[in-house]
Image: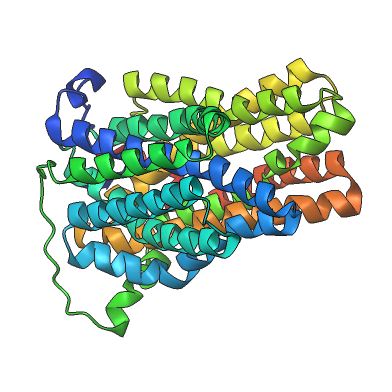
Length: 414
């Protein structure tokens, strides 16, 4: 697989419907769906339970840190594991471990013995498992789809994430309202079923490790990214675009103080980017981007930045919703192209370690993006902070077009 220059003949992928009749990809998609839904249910259930037990905003903030810290510690080892062992088994073990941890949370909640320190211990286990699952699962995708269909497969996988982002929190909230034990039972079921499904996947292409284990191979993904301008440009563009374009962290301020809509408006705005992303995902599964993909990625980031700026200055709800829809749609175009570029430009034996670097950048930018938005909002106010972030995203995209011409000139995905 290569990234083609403008003179390379195109390979046009088959229709998306054939992908859904391809058993390895279909099983992979179902397994990923169950895992994504479980993660989103956990975000609602654990946060609510911790706040209910402690009435502490600080403890609520620690929920995210308890899951993020293991990723920082384990991410490079996780990428190395994904490249040395069967990625199906790595993903399966992680999902089963997450399911068993959720079962303990369900048991402890039902029996009444669960404490806050025990919840945080469970979150560390789930965070560590996710650190190993994510690079292995991402690196597994190219092996379960036929040659030439990675872009549409990526769009389907992105769509699964968006559906989980929309439906998972709602399902978790309804389940928790019925019983605090119910969301943990759902998480247990989803993760265990996802893990079992991985055992049924038959790979199109196997990966065999070619390097002996060692300190150098552990960080080989960093060296590979640094020495590959297209991948370095792609991953760093995502880092800075998300870092600057974190206006969604300011949604509570917009809902209460600027748009004056209250909690219902906040709920609508939080789900709107995912709706826009899902709409674009459906479009990309039907119509692939078959030319000037590098330029299309930069254009999508610029549109995302401009939509963020529009949201920043909006004082009416309908215009804010339109801006958030555009942000979600543009981000999806960028995500699908970025993921496909990174996967196609990386040898299969390196995909786990490169995926770990990408995963680290994405999660770090999400966390730091929220921090950056909060600091700039405290210094300048919410509207200037969001506007600075949106215009800064546009500036980064234009600068990266100059710094990484090889990335800008990528013509097709093959």
